[in-house]
Length: 477
Ligand code: GDG
Image (cartoon, rainbow, N blue to C red):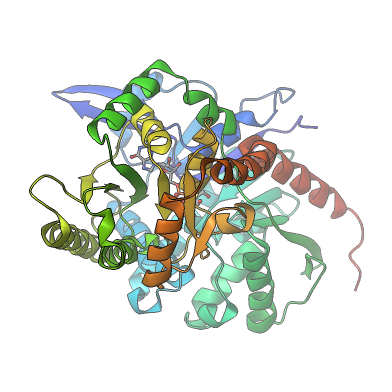
């Protein structure tokens, strides 16, 4: 299928340079997007795939150390002016789009200069693309940082093949209405520059279609939009995970060792586990409220349960994130002080990321994974937990506000605001029979194995190519 060259655009490039004691090394990212993009079969293409993203290093560093970067892709960093980068990323992207699209309207901090920076950053990337794009290239743009980009690419190259995937929720049109007119027009018409627009769920897709209808008067029919004499497909492509990586890691020596150490450390106790970036959307405070409700309602669990809470630093230059850290740490201290005993702490809290083997050891040593986002586009942690459980044990408690809840139908679903219900579900999970745990895990594993990250990436690109071919057909009036 793919003689064409693939160009990926995402905010971050999949690597970082780290300088310690004057010596610089490369840290490659092993996230889901890298696996997905590597799984695409462009082996017939004459040229290597290209990955374009914003540089978080200087031009000097790049020139000096680019030889360290592996050669699966040709990487093109875009160097933005420092102030533009700041206002584009911390400003409009993460203080307007992120909170608004996750329904945190009161956290939206709109500033004109940030919107200007967002447009400039999108233009800078389109400028870079213009210099490297050839007619047969396929461009796949990722996420909310670049919603204006499909249109900018289209303006320069009218027959380009452009796909866009949104990794966060697309909210109800009522939320889009909150944006100043020029912003919503920029974002919505920006997306309509693509041939294919992908979302995690049907609901997000419907929200998008309603938004363009209400805000732009653009009609749609069976997931197809006819706009400015072009067809655009808008559809759901729920992102999967690298299933076999998580499933097979169960038996890796370092995972086995870490798991044994954890089980030994918490011998006699059940373990509840969660891991998230520090983000107000992830519902960590609601999780702690539910834990408190649990110990209040079920005091017989005192000294019998440990909640391991891992919170990974994120976006710490933004005030709302720093505030959240303080709130979480105060709540952890208060609950440990109130419910702990001289020989036991209910919560073991770590602020910092854990290495991959330890992450899988935690997924596979725990009895319950407690995942309570207030809103989450998908939530890969839930899927990774299920995939890791080669032993077919463990119970997933999952917020119904995550995209993942649609697919993970045999998890115990909760509303994160209903602390009593979450507490009751915790008890049900902790007391669930092994046979019932195995039944639920097996159903979810079948789905995750079948629709993994490779399937996701390949089905998106297939649909994109089909859609682009359909442009050759005269659009109906
Ligand atoms: C966005 C959307 C959507 C986390 N802590 C550690 C660690 N992680 C890894 C997990 C997982 C990833 O980070 C987090 O993925 P999520 O999906 O949970 O969340 P976001 O970062 O918010 O991602 C989200 C996703 O995009 C994909 O479309 O699902 O809704 O918000 O892979 O494993 N990995 C290691 N140590 C950690 O401490 N090794």
